[in-house]
Image (cartoon, rainbow, N blue to C red):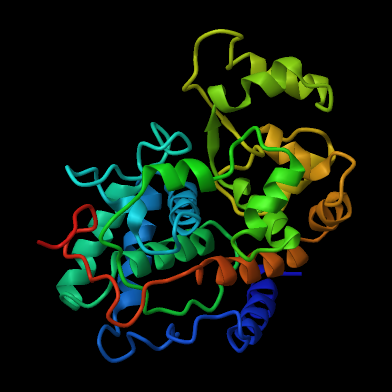
Length: 319
């Protein structure tokens, strides 16, 4: 099936989801239709340039959005720099020296401000940038409602508590996603976002040297760039096609080539094995489930109405 057909089916699926009670009623696909009609095209072009400059940026923005939504909802809090009154999320253990793309969101915000000043939140720009990055990498689109507002604070402790670790087992992953109202299917589909991007050696060293549920040739290949000691920031791709959004990530899991412990836990004799197998065989099913899960995740506890603010600069609260 062609990507155009996959795109069509995904849009139909996501449109049906929009009518469900799980979507926050105060968010709307047409929220900026009158106040900022050039929003989507502006962000799409900005992301195109960012990815053209660095192909890894699609993965970085997708991860940035995930890490934002999982900590007190999709409120742009991860974009806030530390201040004298709070310690933000960027230096939490799951984010420090790894979360990136804030400069791209700042650039997108500046471009959006030129076409509609003081109108679009950083949280909405981040949500839109994540979608456009996936599409530009060959992945699906989904119906994206708008109307999120930006938080005025952030919490490092909440980020440390809520964000899944690369060492998590399957039960922990299912539990952490369930706390956010996301099912095990959502969790597995969203993990497929690892079809894009890379990870640091420090996150997978224990797996490639100590674990047994790993393809030996794959472990040897990864050890070449991730020594037993040192090289913590050396990078390796999740699935070998790190700049293309496809279902190769799940094929890797079936072959015991998951990079992180938490990746391989999805296919390790547990409850998600059949779903992983299905995704490995059908990009259409993966794309549909991923899009559905992104809609749900994008609507985690948004600030709407008069709550929060529209930040003028994404890294700081309005004075």
